Amino acid sequence: MPSADSTPEFDRPNNPGERVFGAREQLAVWLLLGSAFVVILNETIMGVALPELMHTLGISASEGQWLTTAFLLTMSVVIPITGMLIQRVPTRTLFIVAMSLFSTGTLVAALAPGLPVLLVGRVIQASGTAIMMPLLMTTVVTLVPPNQRGRLMGRISIVMSVAPALGPTVSGLILEVLSWRWLFLLVLPIAVSALILGGIKMPNVGVRKRTSIDLVSVLLSVLGFGGLVYGLSEVGAAASGKALISPFVPAGIGAVALALFIWRQTVLQRDDRALLDLRTFKSKPYALSVVLIACASMALFGSLILLPIYAQNVLGLSPLQTGLLLLPGGLLMGLLGPVVGRMIDARGVRPMLIPGTIVTALALLSMGLFTEATSVWQVLATHLVLSIGLAGVFTPLFSVSLGSLPVTLASHGSAMISTVQQVAGAAGTALFVTVMTLVSVSWAGGDAAAVDSEALAHGTRVAFIIGGSLASVGAVVALFVREEPAEVAAV
Image (cartoon, rainbow, N blue to C red):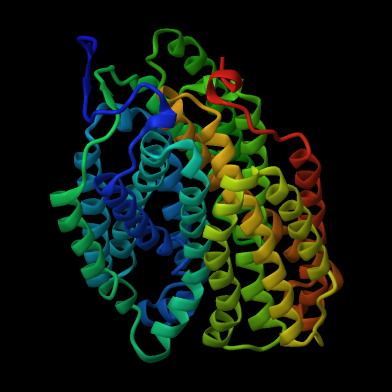
């Protein structure tokens, strides 16, 4: 019998190995996968569009950068709350809210007369995006039997890694023939269709809990995660002397607020009232996986920001050519995701994870050989190798991390993973851009105006070598990751 404060929303056997993954459950997962791909794609779609926006709207680069920074900030603020929302709000309702927010933000952005309204649209978009990924991962862990979970996690890895990688390519293709507004107008009907279909067909899964919302935790999470992401985002601007504020101020406030947030969650989780339950880290496989996800996210987002800069400003490629250069790697990751997932189901995570981390580290270190005379084909080949490595990292980590948690902690675990990805992505971007900027300016004799393609190539080389060194640490950590059943891993 259910307790008085919970409402069962679907019939599920007590033994997870006996879960039925039928047509209804598959529809729910496919709806979430498709919707998540669309919303995550928008996270990186604005980078290539920035030059046109600067020209059309009459804004500076520092002002235009807020279109990405505001998106990241909103994501980092909303995601920590989703663990609690998933437990309180029915799945269909939360899906409708997420896609309604995203669709509304897309429409606002498409019709925006200037930068302020466009920023509002991006913030609304990000609010919906932040809900979607934790909802997807929690639904998969809740519905999918353990022996089929690797395959589904492979498809999630497509969304988490390929969608951001395809953003610059899609943006470049659209901008080649249409205005920047079509970046949103082409997405809008897809988002609305997903909203309508999900509103009709999406089943409710899991068990609801009527818990109170701790407003102090919400405030601390906003200051903590928001401050860290904003501070990290401003590091690159500070390195070039264009920051609005010293990055140490928001980062310092964020670090203090985050420490208070962690303390408060450890107190509240004793009564199951935590906004983000940190008992997930009692599972060693989960804790190690989160560390590795952070390293992989830094590598992915750092390379996504640095490779276009290198391709356009050092090799002289156009935005469209740059997008096409990154396209094969994104597609390869998409093709490998389900393949890696099936191998995980058959052989476990370690045969995929350990080689994946090693290949990722070697690819980033190889990018440290890039010069102003490097062939485009060498860049393409190295990016393909990096994509193979990352495909062997994300899918195993999603599977082993959430698979080691009891269902009652799945929503908090997925929310934490998504939060770590955003913060690590911002950190990777800041690290790569800052190192590139500082080294390039130093190579040019300390004069930022004198930075040429040779100096910039030298800066990107050093940044990639540091990224490869960080990924090498991840390869060592991967040696200690082992699969454990949820009842053993989390106590």
